[in-house]
Image (tube, rainbow, N blue to C red; front, side, top):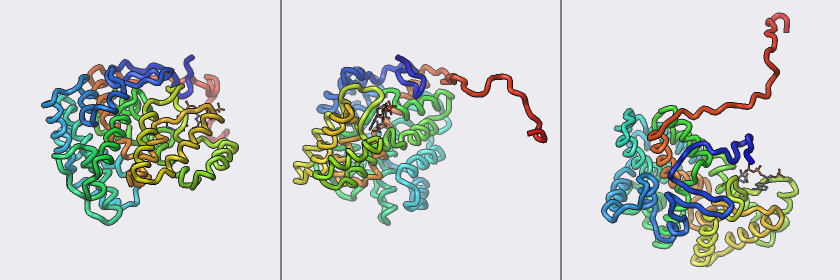
Length: 373
Ligand code: COA
């Protein structure tokens, strides 16, 4: 059944990028199952797949890895802006505003040629990672760590964030998380990007719209809210009372429920396993154990499944990433899907302009002069 509120189940575009079967818990990029991509692929390979519609050959993958690596360099004026915001802006606000400002320094900013837009997709993918890492360091009074184009995206992001090379297990965990978050059909932020692109506005504007949309707690902001909730609960023995009290207050439990999946979100399957693995290798399973208990309760009491945001929260926390960077890291991955959709929109564009069901006063109403009101 089609619900007008929230455009539930409304098909709003043709797209060959992402296939979801919400009833069977299937997610695929260009027809390739997400489970296979999570196990065998890398973020850069997924970028190629999303942008080009096929898996890269070895030389193509090496080239894209190098190109994204080179594009991780951000202009000095962007770093100046981040420095000036000095922690007053939230990390997500800083990312949104920095991406908007990046267009001023982008050599392709004024071109809508397909090749220029393709270059902007690669460039923005590189730059987002650097902006998130640099802003975090600057707000802590530390200097940004310049990118190293020779490293993979996940590895270099962790290095730029922490100032030291991360272990292989952490790099792989983040790389898989980036693969899992890369695209998700017409989710709210991608739809926002496509609406902006469909006016033939530029890619920086479309991505700025997307980041603003991702920020909300009903979308990408949920992962940060999950960790806040787990920290408020504090320990495994307090989970049952706390969650029941939240449900009694009719609070939404962040990280649960989904507009499209009626069964388990396949991304949650991987993130749950990753959360357990990272916890066991760190020798501290407290966040994972609490998450499992929350999940059981919400399944029993509300018949709701965990979504992508629930276990990504504990994974990122255990990787030592600050909670307010969880949603910006979602953007560091989703930029690949956003830009793929913007490129697809430009290639077959028509203005997106729906109608509203009018529910206001019946037409015609009299215009009452100011003195007579
Ligand atoms: N916790 C508790 N109850 C929830 C819930 C949650 N996380 N998600 C949905 N519900 C309940 C709603 O209260 C509603 O109950 P009601 O019919 O008794 O009022 C019912 O399930 C339908 O929810 P609704 O918000 O209308 O569904 P939606 O399709 O509009 O929303 C989400 C989908 C994802 C926005 C919603 O599930 C949600 O807010 N989840 C928490 C935020 C989150 O994790 N977002 C990330 C999504 S990947």
